[in-house]
Image (cartoon, rainbow over all chains, first blue to last red; front, top):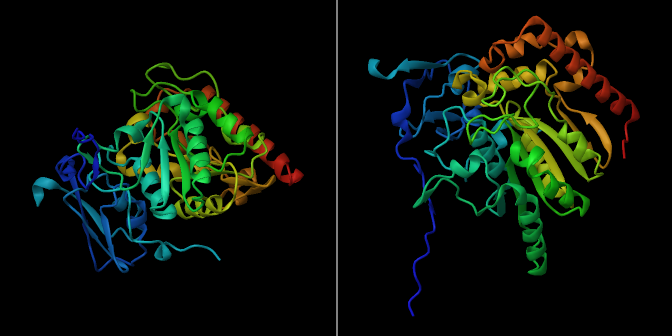
Amino acid sequence: MEMLETPLSKPSEGSAGITGYWRTFKPVINKSKCVKCLLCWIYCPEGTVIRINDSVDINYMYCKGCGICANECPTKAIDMVLEEEI
Amino acid sequence: MSLKIKDLPIEDYWLSGNPSCPGCPASLGLRLLMKTLGPKTIVVIPACCSTIIQGAYPKTSANFPILNIAFAASAAAASGIVEALELKGRSNVNVVVWAGDGGTVDIGLQALSGAAERNENIVYVCYDNEAYMNTGIQRSGATPYGAWTTTTITGKKEHKKNLPLIMAAHGIPYVATASISYPIDFITKLKKASKIYGMKYIHLHSPCPTGWRFPSSKTIEIGRLAVLTGTWVLYEVENGIFKLNPPSNVLIDRNKRKPVRSYIKIQGRFSHLTEKNIDELQRYIDRQWETYLKLLSIGKIY
């Protein structure tokens, strides 16, 4: 008898869809102010602050716009910009 | 040597785009937990927010094995996994329970106490968001005095249950408190716990924007204020030796602690508190500190 396929979930990004659509405010990094302390990277609940060596970027596909990165940035290098203004 | 943010691995096993609320401390906690312990980890999760934020079939945001289990059974299930791994001769796998405060201080306490008494080789992490957030913000044993929840609409009348000290009373090898706002402290404690044989308990304070009624950007800020006001105390009990961790170790002097008012005024769940209630909270915090100072003076508490 053939085995039925088990209803097993597979690990994947976006298990709740494109969560970037939830955003009202978008974090924008001002690279000239960034001191590469990586606090935004370690504090991001989603892991959407991407770390490339010591510099950071944001994965807008899944960033929910919670604003923790902007709130915690010691040099205020991240601005929260209303989505419509972009 | 202290750990630095730059030294932490880039790999994440907790994936982006999961269904957690914006600013979720449980999502951040799971991300840090897996970043620290790596892929050779089996996580047991009872009913809590983390059951939901794994995502719905056919996708899951967890790139590591999870056993979802009933509320009361998490520590018992983890005990079984540990025994099975030992029989199979696999000693290099971490068995972790990741449970909310309801599943730890209330419903899961019996299984947890049993596992602690048997000294099972488990890392038990309770992420404490101080209410049953998953089911709609009902009060739990970990909800602090005065806090609004949907079942304490005029504010909770009782104080928070001090579970880390209850766990220390079991005489287990390692008990620690941590805060989501101090990730290096949390990661250091996790690393230390994963190297010790026996029952390890870490209580992680996790401010919840949805249940505590504050903007999602303030999660870390509020967690930090909880520590700086002395409401949440960072300490560890390693083989019975009680030790305060920074920044709590400099808050021994009462004048260095911020007034509790600065912590509660930015949370909607405390917005109805009167001056009398705030004084009661402050008195409770000072009483708790007297206990910790006594423990500190004893040094080896078991």
